Amino acid sequence: MDPFSEITLTLPNLSSFCLVDEPVGIINGGNVLDEDMAGPLLQMDTVISLRKVIRCSELLIAAIIDIGPLCTVAYCQPGSTTWLVSGLGSKGSVIDMMFYEGGISYFESYLVESHGALPLVKRTILGICDNDTIGGIKPVGIEFDVCQSDFESRSWVKVSSVGDDQALFLSQSSSQSVDVSQYKLKGDCIYFMDDGSCDWFWKDAPSSCAVYDMRDGECFFIPLPTGSCKDLKTPAAWLFPQS
Image (cartoon, rainbow, N blue to C red; front, side):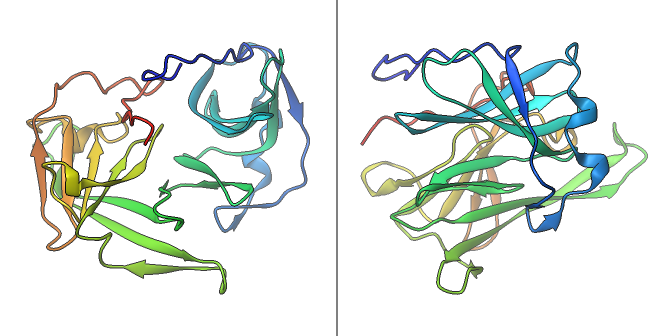
């Protein structure tokens, strides 16, 4: 349901799916290995959870789903009763996908559409071994790399700024570029939240939301309710009204 318009869309039950066999291809720039294929893991008693859904068009819905330890993608048409699940997948984590220029892209980084461009954002959390810390890792910093898509050269070009009047809001289920000139928000920043994937970074944090400043690389926390972002099956998400 769109929380602003209250328009709802009924999707098939996750237990109703059909595996689509596909040739071994390229995912995230690397060859998909046989042991990462979905087939052996698609058992009927395997727990299936929905991570992200996007409405590509009036005739196509795409989703990132977890089937046991496997992450893959699924498709359906509005009104259908069955998901078509891709036979290609990974035991890693496909964080984001986006429908852009008539195609769907999947990455282990965050995708954000911004004024016709397609920034790719990679988050790296830095830590050191510490036997006195729960989990054995002590966080020492965080870095973000932002690349813009160059469709002519079919490559990604690293950039040092997202714009003084722009900010990127990242989460596993929704990411967006926002013009912050009309709000009391700091520009050229990346807003991100605890998605439950790196507990050792967030366990002593004063908030479940943080901001990374592209200008100086500093990171600071902003006050939002804590403890509500920990469920990996239903991670917290940013909600944006239609412009």
